[in-house]
Image 1: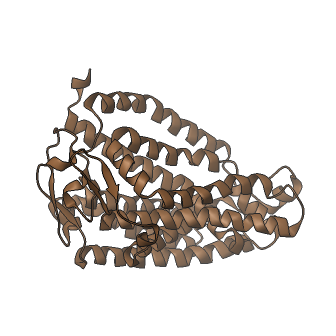
Image 2: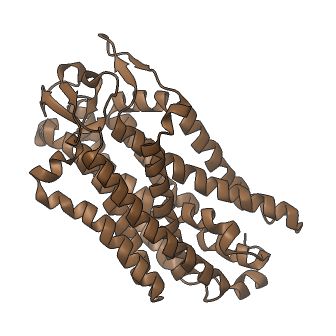
Image 3: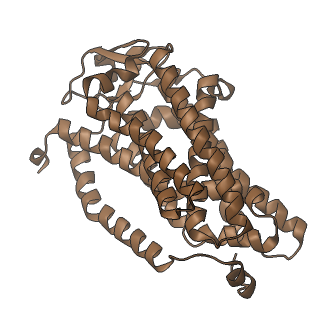
Length: 382
């Protein structure tokens, strides 16, 4: 059965699926994170804040499935990548998980007591649960582009030689701020279709306007740094799409500007950064003209384009090493076996459409604006 699809095709398919899962997470849980990040600022009264919370309250848990699926895909398809990244980024991931844990607690306990101070504290907990993951995810991507300080010995044991504070370099922070801007823009666009016209929506539009402009400027700055900064990796030899999963058989070198090589080789790949810029501009236009659908479509296209730009720039790299380029992990040299990838693909073909159909059905059922009147009349709301 495993010979039905060649090994190199399976590896490529799983690279594409990983991109789909990451984009799915950014576009669904992204607006949850963005709304939570804006919560203390766009909503000032208790009714306003409950209205904002209930715009994402029924669906945020389901949206986190994409995050879990992404981690599971890395674990199953590229165990080397999982081992190195989850051990090297342990403290950063602990920080993300600690922030994410505040979300369910904040949603469940925020309205248990009528005390304003109690509710305000949980509002800020929800802010932390939205802002911190948005920032750290972007910082992580920036570090991956720069290269991770790890090496492999002759027995393929990994050794991480970095520290938590080394992750927050200027370029990584730029990527983190781009991530926050992208997420806030998406959250503001989501509020445009989910809450009633009024003060909350006006404040969200102001935040969305600033976030759209920052997304364009920061994405352009990141592109310029990648083009002219001392950053990039290139495979010199040993890139065998059907070869064994042994990173040490691939010879890799650091080379400034190498991350743009794929865009020069495949001009159509420029569609990805184009979507990043055009989508943000469309979202900005939609926000300013009060066209909620255009704003949400634009923020979605921008997020998908920015994430796709990173993936296409790095292909076939997944986790380059900054201290030993030969240890860098790629789509070809760090995957699971042929049979494992094939069996997982069969399961994905069966279950992923079911997840998509169920998600679409849930949003169809829950579609509609949350109003202050609804919140005031329903004490069982968050």
